[in-house]
Image 1: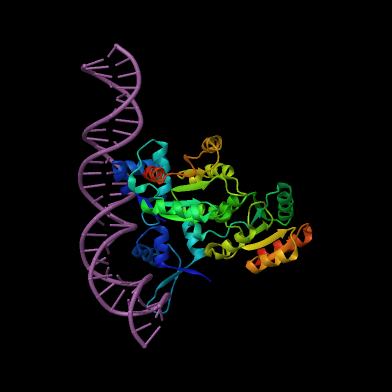
Image 2: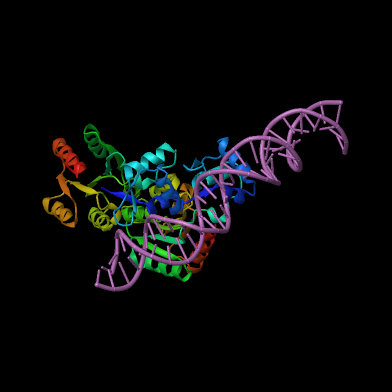
Length: 186
Length: 186
DNA sequence: ATAATATGTGACATTAGTGACATTGTGCTA
DNA sequence: TAGCACAATGTCACTAATGTCACATATTAT
């Protein structure tokens, strides 16, 4: 469990150590003390929460680094493989889930940055997947790319529910690559 | 009886090993020494007591196991609810998942002790759920109870794949309660 | 058994907490 | 704009806790 010392926080905020300690004393910043002389430690999560609350910039080094991983959800293995090839050529690691259950487990366990989702998987409601995922605090950074052969209104519905992009099947490798690269950035 | 080494405690507290040893020497943290060179060991209970005494955060991995939880996977809400009633009456907390994706996310996030699984959910292959779950190291303690209206050979197949028990629909509340209690024990 | 890893120790280097006081920043009024 | 009050932040010196390093030796894994 990585924590920060008062000194490190002072550096991150470009502020005097004395000030950090005052923030801690006043409760503005949550932390705890070591047994010895009471040296302070702050959980990274608490520090980030503090920074966000005060609209302060979050240092790159502290941003929770989601692995540059792409989860491919598609019941048709050939399609999944072809998406995988595109992802690999762009330099990203991949996971393939051919069913909803697998997809849920993988998403929760590996926290990929991007999930491609086939809307029209038999017996699996892609919409509810989007809906449910968007409610999960732990997945707020996830980018969802819907891939489907359905009509535009279906894709639009997916976007309304919270998908970040949509592609119609058959998709162009170029478009997909571009989406991967774009979403990996921010 | 599981104990912690000085190194493990150093990791948990994000502190130098030297410091942990000083805490032990000064009696701030209670522990004992192995006969050899005097390597330190600390009972988990003592460590938690120490953390609480100093208002330090307790690592997830050490928290005493959460309340015994049952994950109910069934697409028909009335059935799910009735299983939930049985579980509650036996004193257990419950979660309900009505789709495979939800089930996968919940299983991974909440690590319940028991999962009840409806084999015949439309578009969701219960067998592959069992198979996939059994491969997951993180879910090795999970008990799977298959509940289905299918014939005996289907249930047998589920058992072969790794289910721990099976019930035919309609099931008797008594049987289900008994299974819950039995599986919660070991 | 043997190799790889983890731990304890002492001496020493760094860093953090504290209190008193100086400095800066902000908002207000004239 | 100048002057003022008040709060927040920075500075400094001192002390004590924590970190670092090298090395011997348990302990664990192969």
